[in-house]
Length: 129
Image 1 (tube, rainbow, N blue to C red):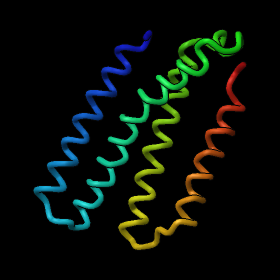
Image 2 (image 1 turned 135 degrees about the vertical axis):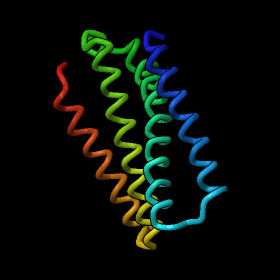
Image 3 (image 1 turned 180 degrees about the horizontal axis):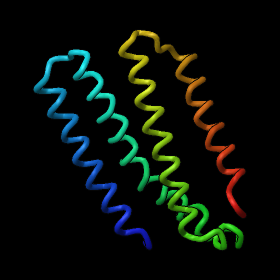
Image 4 (image 1 turned 30 degrees about the vertical axis):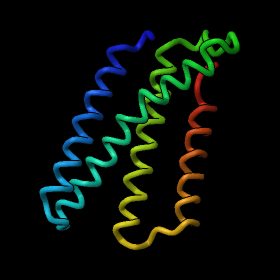
């Protein structure tokens, strides 16, 4: 794997954020400030957990695929993984915030996931081939 430093760095950040989230949930009462900190840690932990996963999936699916996928370069693959991780973290934080407010239902959740998928599809069409 060519991105060992990237995977190791995001993996360490993910473990630290999941640990901080565990400490926050077990030690602090659910005040407004603590809920905001929870949302930041939650989004960051999901983001840092999704980046190496997205990178591994892309390398597995497109690493042996078309020639144009290989000619795009490894920087494009890593920026794709970062974009997908950030999108997953923002989606997770938004869904959790709506759950805190009692406004999340299945239809709204499905709509937000669909919007995130559409954003990724639009960003993918803007990439060089």
